[in-house]
Image (tube, rainbow, N blue to C red; front, side, top):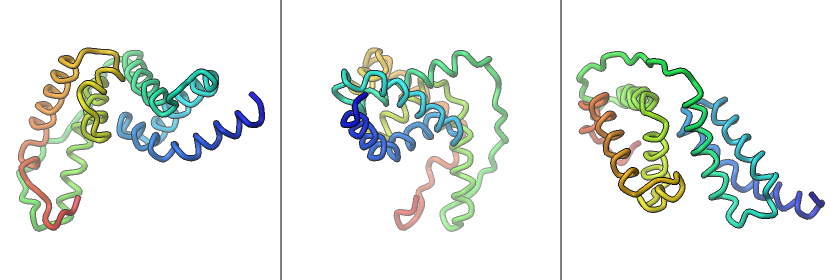
Length: 170
């Protein structure tokens, strides 16, 4: 890799890392795992830098596929989730934290492909066709995975999902 090409790659990494890390963290749910996932994707990119036309898309595609692959290699293990109380969180900001923790726990129980679909569809605001292209599956598969994932989240966080924070707070 020549100095000009290396400088171009470093500029890409500096520009794209914050957004790519956000996606990696949304997929993995843990900082160290997100760092590993992003590093793996960037390692693959650097070896193909001169051939890749869309580096952002390439890195994202590698992250989604690698995340699913990591999950498949792990042994299946059950993630315990505490029973959530039926709370009214409309006036208590502290209870919004309870909602966020419940949702984060429920997200960890999703299958990797379902989580990847939710990240792409709702965090990155991509169409079903774009998600299907990135994940290498059909649009129908994306739709069914999103539907199943949302049903699972509703079951885990049901009482909280109907509550909307006041004043646009998130």
